[in-house]
Length: 167
Image (cartoon, rainbow, N blue to C red):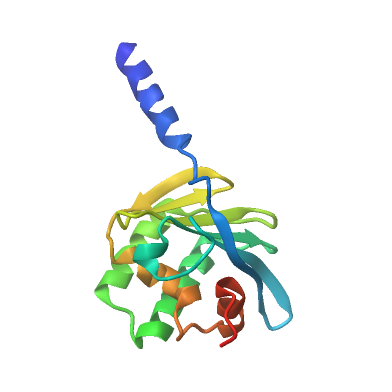
C-alpha cells in the first residue's frame, strides 16, 4: 500500500507541473491551409523578445486548434516540415517522431498543445495545460521550433506574426 501511495504522489507531482509563468507574448498569428483555419499560434518568452533559442528560453509556443486533427496526421505533418527544412528526413527525425507518438494525442477543436523550451534544452509538451512529457535531446527544441521560426519555414506569414518582424 505504501508503494502505491508513493507512486501516486510521484505521478501527481509529474502531471501537475505547470508551464512557466512570468512569460510575455512576443507575437501571435493564424495558420490556415487553403481555406481551412487549422490553429492559432502564440509565441512567448521571458521578456517578450525573440533573440535565439538559447537567449530566449524559456520559450513557449502555444497552438490552439480550430479543427480536429489526429495524432498521426500531426506527426506526419511534423516530419514533412522537417523534410521541407532539411531537404530530407534523417534517422534523428524518425527517432523524434517515435517519441512524439508516445507523447502526443489527437486534438479536437478548442484544444491547446504547448511546446516549452527550457534553458537546459529540454522540451516539455502540454495538452490543455497538463504535462504530457518531455524530450531531453537538446537538438530537438530548435529542430521542432524551426518549423515555425526558421527563415526557411513553409509558413513565412505566420513566422512574421510570431516574431513581429517586417521581413
